[in-house]
Each structure stands twice: as C-alpha cells, then as structure tokens.
Image 1 (tube, helix red, strand yellow):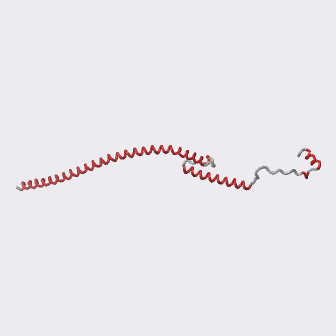
Image 2 (cartoon, rainbow, N blue to C red; image 1 turned 180 degrees about the horizontal axis):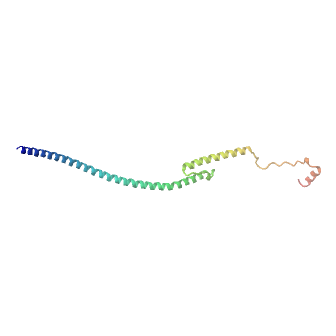
Image 3 (cartoon, rainbow, N blue to C red; image 1 turned 180 degrees about the vertical axis):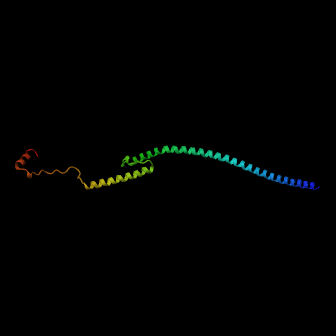
Length: 160
C-alpha cells in the first residue's frame, strides 16, 4: 500500500505541477501576446517614421534646389545692386565701387565717398592758396622812360 500511496502522492504532485505549468503557460501566452501587440505597434510606428523620413528627404532635396537657384541668382543681384549704386552716385567713379556682397559694396561706397570728400577738401585748400585772378591781366602802358629819344621817335612812327 505504501507503494500505492506513493504513486497517489506522486500523481497529485504531478497534477499540481501540471496546474502550475498550465498557469505559467497562460502567463507566458499573455506576455507573448502583449509582446506581439507591442511589436505590431512598433512596426506601424516604424512605417510612419519611414514615411516621415521620405517626406523630409524630399523637402531637403527641394530646399537644396531652391538654395542652389538662390546661389546662382545672388551674384546677379549683387552685380545689379553695384550698378544701381554706381548710377546713384555720379560723383564717384564706378571703378571705386567694388565688393562681392551688398555689405562689401556699401563699405566700398562709404570709403569712396570719404576719399572724394578728402580730395575735394585738398583741392579747395590748394585753390585757396593759389589765387589766380579771373580773366587776362590789365594792360599796362609801355615804360618809355628807359628809351633814348631816337627809340621813342621810332616807336611812335611804327604805331606803337
């Protein structure tokens, strides 16, 4: 009978172990289902992110093309600005206005204006120092006092 009792105990132990394994199996099945759901969500999120990345790449390509177009148009715009500045400042030689950027052109214009003003001041100062009367000088009569009487007669006969 002991042998039978041992077998009954063993069967009951196996039964409770089976119940425990069934519980563990159900728990693992729930965890597996939960992980599968999480994987599905992550795959959907990844698909969405892939779409976003594709859209961002397209936007970047578009922006790069626009930037390239702007880069090609910028030198033309700067050259046009330089020409307008030269026309707006006729007192300054166009060769004095230079630069590859608007700021550079503005700076060269400022320097050219300063140079022109300095030259004007120096020319004005030089003109003030060297006063030349306007027109021809007045005619003065010939000094006949140094001539001999014969030379005076000759001068008068020649129509002098």
